[in-house]
Amino acid sequence: MKRVHYSWVILFIAFFSIVTAGIIRSSSGVFIVPFEDEFGWDRSTISFAFAISLLLYGISGPFMAALIEVVGLKKMMIIAMLTLLMGILLTFFMVKPWQLVLIWGIIIGLGSGLFLTVLSPYIANQWFVKRRGLALGILTASTATGQLILLPLLAVIVETHSWKWAMGLILCLSFIMLVFILLFIKNSPLEVGLLPYGQEMPSTVYQVEQKKNPIMIAFQTFIEAVKVKEFWLLAGSFFICGLSTSGLIGTHFISYCIGFGFTAVTAASMLSLMGVFDLVGTTLSGWLSDRFDNRWLLFWYYSLRGASLMFLPFALSDGSYIFLIIFSVFYGLDWIATVPPTINISRQIFGMEKSVIVYGWLFASHQLGSAVAAGGAGLIYKIFNSYSWAFALAGMFCVLASLFVIVIKKQRVKVEIQSHVAN
Image (cartoon, rainbow, N blue to C red; front, side, top):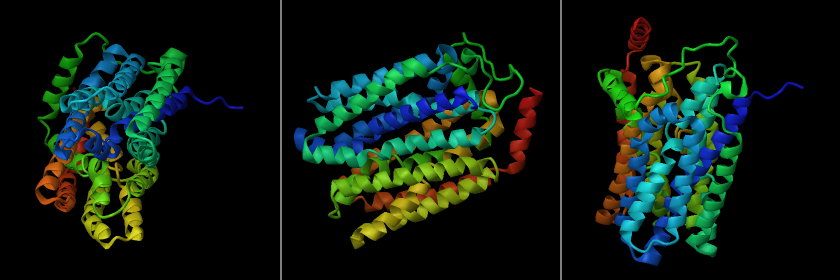
C-alpha cells in the first residue's frame, strides 16, 4: 500500500486549524445581538470592535509571513492558537466596551492573523509542487468554510442556553487544534526527510535566510511591490473583496435577516450553506486557476458577486426562503473563489520567494475593506435603520473590482517574470 505523503498530513492539520480560527473570527456575527441584550452596548460600538479585528488580522498578514521564515511554521502556529485561546477565555470576564475592543479587536484579531491570511499560500508553496493549485484551493476554502459552517450550531446554543455556552464550544475546539499542532506540524518537508509533494530533485531555489529582521523583510517587499501598477490593481480589487464578504456578509448578514423576520438560526443556517458551497467553489477555483486566465476568472467572480449582493435586498423583502436559499448557494460558490487567482497572479508577477509576503500586503488591503464594511454598515444601520444601502453599495463596488482586474495586462505578467529571473 502506497504511503500518504506527509504534505497531505500538514494540509489536513492546517485546514482544520484555519477552520477553527475562522469559526472564532466569524462567531462575532452570532454574538452581536446577545452582547446588545446582555451588556446594553450600542450596535455601532460592537461593530467597531469587530471592525478592528478584521483590520488587525489583515494588516498583520505580511509580518506573519516574514515571521514564519524567521521563527518557523510550527512555533508561529502554536503562538497564534494560544493567542486565540487567551482571547476566548478573557471574553468570559469582560464587562466594559473597551474590553470588547481589546479582546475581540486586538487579541483575537492578531491571533487569527496567521491562520486567515498567509498560512494557506505558505503551505501550498513550501509543501507542494504538484497539485499546488488544488492544495491552495482547499486551504483557501477552509478560511470561509470555517467562518460559516458551525454558525447554526452556535446560534442554537445561544438561543437555547447562552452566548457563554457557545463560547465554551469554540474554546474546546481551539484547545483540540493546539494539541494537533503540537503533535503533527513540521516546519518543512526536510524535517521528515522528504521533498515537497511532486518534487523529484532537491532544490535550494526557495530557501531563504533565517536571521533577517521580519519587519524589514515585510517592508522591503512592500516598497518593491508598490512600484508595480498591478499591485495596486490587485490591492484595490481585494479591498472590495473584503468589503463584500467577511466585513459585510460575515458580520451583518444574520442581523440583516433578523430585521426581515427571519430567525437567527435560519440566517446562520444560510451562512452555513454558503460555507458548504464555498468549499466547492473555492476548491474548483484553485483547479481552474491552474488552467485558465486568472484575470478573466476574477472578472467573472466579482461581476457575479455584485449581481448577487444587489439581489439580496429583494430576496429578503419578499420574505421567500427559496430566494434566500438561491442567494446563499450562488453567493457561497463565489465567497472567496477570488483568492486562488489573486495568489497566482501575485506569484507570476513577484516570483515564488516574495509572493507570500506580497499576498500578505494584498490581504491587508482585503481586511481594510472588511473593516470599512463592518464598521460602515453599522453606521448605515444606525442612520437608516436598515442595511439595504450597505448591501447595494457593496454590489456596485464589486462591478468596479471586475474592471480593476481586467485592466491587468497579460503581457505584463510575462515581463515581470523575466525581470525577476534576470535579477
